[in-house]
Length: 362
Image: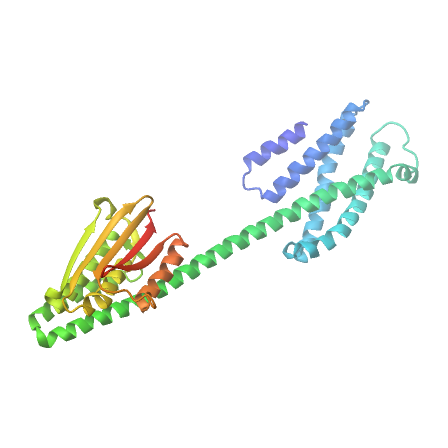
């Protein structure tokens, strides 16, 4: 028992000892201590022989199982599927049981012959009497060891696969989101350049102001190109510049109003999400109305979500409400980023088209 406590204390001190050796030492020490305890309860227990039995049990059975481990590792059994592995473990348990039988019978016989008083008799007689019990115990013990060892490797491999698949899924999601986001930059900038082109001849002064606004938009786009998310405050600054740029082109035909709850300014949302709604309101709403109208943007908290609504005058085409790169892109990005928890819809009623975006308030 003192030897067992010594092993445990040693393991506590040497934390760098691999898990495999910790399990080997503790497992076989506990098993050998149990066998010694059973012998002690049986009476006429010899402490001297018991100590030798304990040390030899731990050393020999660790040696046997370690040799099997090296054998299995060389043949990559830890990478097999459960069906193929089981076909190898059944004969392996039998072989290890036979090795256990020969090792244990020889060890006990020699200890009785050399250390105990009296003659142990011929080895063959001792073997005939005890072989079945020892073989059964050996198969049982080695089966438990084999299952524990390979279940550990199987579990470790499965956890590794789950982690790797999760990592690959995240990489794929980030790549897809980055690709979708990069599609919006040229789309957005192309529309802005068209606006300036229309102003250059008609209103040079407004064109110069439009170029200043586009410069700010380009600066934001170029320096934050790698960001998939941004704060609502930053997104609204982008939307405000865009709407002002559009107002230079449309003049009195475009009016806009932006309302946002004060405590939502630092909340992170998908970059260009509100801007896409504003662009859609201009292109399919205000741009098609002779008298123009008001683009009304409202951002409010709603339970555990944030609701963003852009309203504009117009008539909704129910046959193709999500046509265009911007809106298709937005729905894909919402699905990827929020895993189905976000909601986007466009409805039309009484000459007003309302595009609403509902995202979790993380």
